[in-house]
Amino acid sequence: MTATDQDKPSIPGARVTGSAPDLGLPPEACLFEGSLDPCTVIIFGATGDLTAAKLMPALYNLFLRGGLPSPCCIVGCARTPLGRQEFQERMADAVKNAGLDLSRWHDFAAALDYCPLDYAASSDYDSLDRFLKSQEEKHQTGNRLFYLAVPPSLYGAISQELGRAGLATAGERHWVRLVVEKPFGRDLATAQELNRVLHAHFRENQIFRIDHYMAKETVQNINIFRFANAIFEPIWSRNYIDSIGIIAAETVGVGRRGRFYEETGVLRDMFQNHMMHLLAVTAMEPPSLLEAERVRDEQLKVFRSLKPLASPKLGEDIILGQYAMGTVADQEVPGYRDEPEVAPDSLTPTFAALRVFVDNWRWQGVPFFLVSGKRLQAKLTQIVIQFKDVPHSLFESVHLGEIAANRLILGIYPEEKITLIFETKNPGAVTCLRQVTMEFPYYANYQGPVMEAYEKSLIDAIQGDLMLFWRQDAVEETWSYFNPVIEGCEACSDLASRVHLYPAGSWGPYKAWPILAWLVG
Image 1 (cartoon, rainbow, N blue to C red):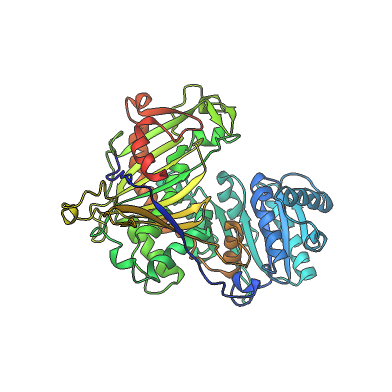
Image 2 (cartoon, rainbow, N blue to C red; image 1 turned 90 degrees about the vertical axis):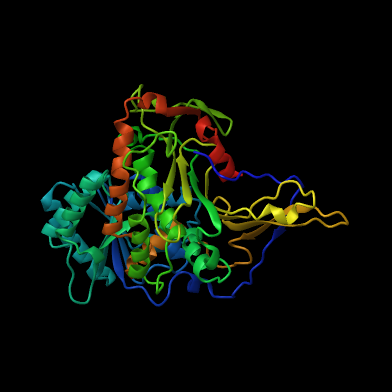
């Protein structure tokens, strides 16, 4: 599996930067439109890592910016027996560790409470019902947002108990919503079973399957960039584009998630969800309206157009890897097989590079290279659009050296920017070409609040906007595509020789270097 164009200019390039006006909007105008319904946010798994690292900092940051409903009440639920004050102190530490200013913590904590709960005890949900009613009377809220920040094995049990206790329904003037973290099953059968269990008490429009990649600013901007600019959409097809690469590289290892990762691997952990969404926003057709169901309809069409990899060719369509001992940030780190709760002879891949095809009129024959892995050299997420070569016969009479094909790079992390690479004449009497890199930093000349992905997801869930959340038919379609891929890899008789080791801190296995060199520049 190789990229078709790895051109390097023979003449030093030039670099220019872009600019954008500051619209002068008040900060609150950049958070949401209209008003938010008063509500209670109930977090299951409130003493866990996700709540401490992401949810509580996101909620507090929204509070600081006026981005939470007024009134709003937040209730933590978990097995750990804690009092209200002790829970507040834990959450204050979490917010402090996130680098946020605690000067207004007292005001925020006034609406922060805790209700210990055994997820398997029906009587505890009856107690939760009484507790929530007392809180809603105190804070004058009536709507409820349940957030499942718990292991996926608990999703079914919690949703069933919420339904049994009458917590899944609301009165005529109120709403109840359920936020579910990925993974949504570990294959098609388990995804369908989870859906059956959730739908026993919750309607589809009540279920918010969160994928924080969807809520990243620069991912949201892809639709605007494509469909609000007449210069790009007409050439966004097989007629002008040679190949597209999408990379989501991580520097971290599996850490304390060894047991989970042994049952998951990189294909389930990253490709079935994050990578598929990045593919969808890059390849989808323009929706008739920028509205949740219209957008999700077009994304579903992309998944249905994926050319099957029923018998994946390891080494041609798929390259697998696993990180070995190496160095990250000048520190020696263990290999995957030396991580806690990982089998010493594990063949679970931590890296994968896939070549996939969207088999429709727009993209037929254009390869999409999807790459993701752990313990790589840098944390990087970007989309590279490689355009086709120009006819070189035009310049046969002039010695120009190599003429590089145009390239468009949509930077998502860490540099949120749009980069366009094209050829120009080098100043001077001799006709020479030089490559120009034009960059537009996404936040250039912007003075408003910078919203993290979880903040955007929470606001959308409170507003009831499903655009940036997974719909069940899309979940099933992506699992239908990846099931035979994963099963084919796991059943491979010589898998040990197909999972290529790579040093932690490198860009991945040697076999994938051609595509990686093109993707990371």
